[in-house]
Length: 138
Image (cartoon, rainbow, N blue to C red):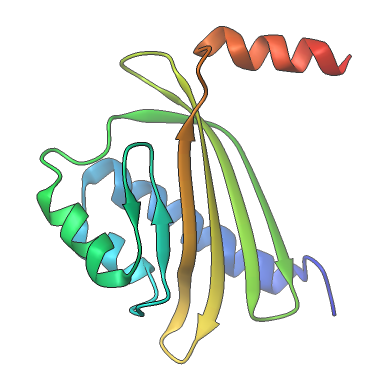
């Protein structure tokens, strides 16, 4: 198995960037298109647990205004072979300064790359939490 094959990494990086753009513009069609249309798809959010593509799609339609604006601080993507990748994003919410984390497992399907599992959470300490955790590593 090849980890981070440059061609596969470039494919998934472009998809993660496109997902972020769709999230910030509340492009529900593009967001739904990024997820695997399966009852096995899971998205665990800041305030919701969604246990199928249908639940995820219903959540997006019902969420007025979309995701709060955010700034990506760090993105790490690792590909495993040609058909599986994980993406991790650290972000700061523009309105509150809170630091959040997003992880996605991408799989190559017959319909292209899709998110099969996603998780979004916020750190309790806000912007200072990230700085503190980085200081502890030194």
